[in-house]
Amino acid sequence: MLNPKMQVALNAQLNEEFFSSFLYLSMSAYFDRLSMSGLANWMKIQSQEEYIHAMKIYTYLLHKGGRVELHTISQPKLDWKNVLEVFEDTIYHERKITELVDNLVNLALDLKDHATNSFLQWFVTEQVEEEANVCKIIDNLKMIGDNRTGLFMLDRELSQRAAAVSTAAAAV
Ligand code: OFO
Image 1 (cartoon, rainbow, N blue to C red):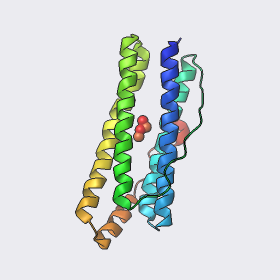
Image 2 (tube, rainbow, N blue to C red):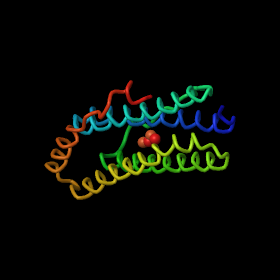
Image 3 (cartoon, protein in one colour):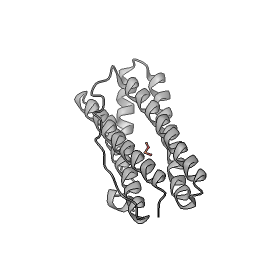
Image 4 (tube, rainbow, N blue to C red):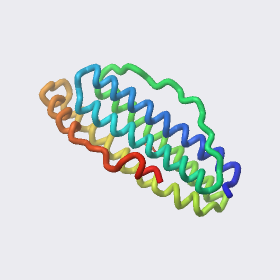
């Protein structure tokens, strides 16, 4: 049985993960508008991964006899100045998510909720990888600057990203 405080906190995180999915889908649509299909592909997969994160929490809540409570998802930003600004917003957002995950772990420790603490460790590790991936792209974009060929090459490289696992398989 989940502590009511943990149930509320996990549902809030569930909503944050769905918002992340929306935000990255909006970024993907922005890149498609610019005909940057590689960047659009990278963000679309990022959006799918966030959906998987949300569904992991959804499934965990149900396994623990908790209640899933879906909230309204805020409208994400629709426009950016340039490619770099999109990824700067992404790292800002991911750092906020890392902080939220850390707060959840702190709550689990306070409540001596070992099962939830163990469940959350997957997210702790995932955030390290996500932040590193985004930082690498930001470094590349800074090196490229206004060089159109460089941007074209990066777009080609990011078109190679493939979804690691099927949505259904990853959510359990
Ligand atoms: Fe990008 O983060 Fe989910 O957890």
